[in-house]
Length: 81
Image (tube, rainbow, N blue to C red; front, side, top):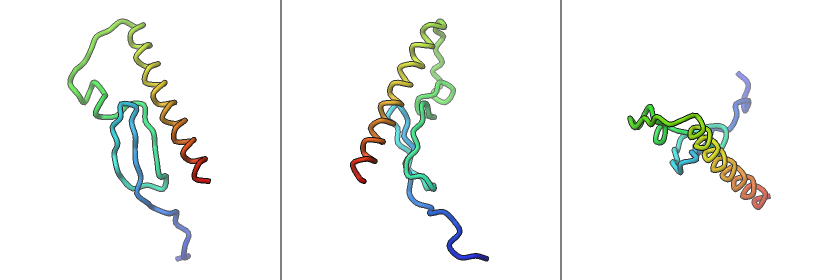
C-alpha cells in the first residue's frame, strides 16, 4: 500500500443553530447544521402544530442563526491566516 495517501483525521465539532455542540472526529474541523437531535421535534417529543406562515418564519429564524454562525466561523478563519 502507498504511504501518506489518507486524509488527516482530526477532532471536529458539529455545531447546531440552537447552540448544541457535538464533538467527534472527521476530516473537516467544523460542520454547522441548521437543526439537530436536541432541537428537532421528532426527537424532543414536543410536536407543535402551527400554520404554514409560522413554519416559514421559524425556518427563516434558524437560517439567520446558521448564517451568522457560518459568518463568524469564516471571520475566525481569516484571522488565523
